[in-house]
Length: 132
Image (cartoon, rainbow, N blue to C red; front, side):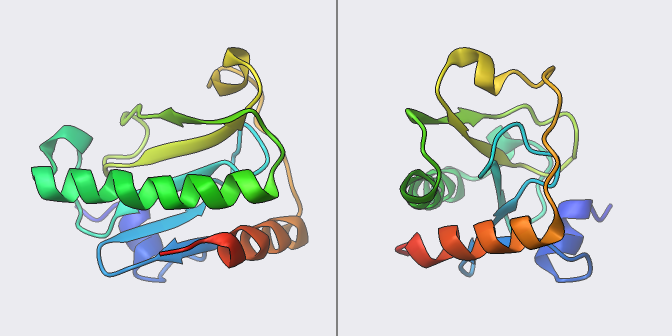
């Protein structure tokens, strides 16, 4: 079954793209917990993160690290929190969330709202900092 993330990767659904390579795609979460909240997905459609082949899982983490470093350069924060829930969309993905405390990564918190222009500007700023 094709997921919303697969449609985003294929360009069938618009996204605020941060970066991509032949195996992974990073884009801003449209229901963010924090400014700069980014999702990293494999282009290969696999439901559960720990069902990824070892090499693909390792590569996804290295890719996510590069995205996290770019986010840190644009969004003031103490750390980039990493969350893997895997229940909301049946496509392996990693949340990268700028945080200043543990409470900042609670998914029960209200989501932030940004205008399309704000999302576009933020995605462009982060994208310029990515070193793939």
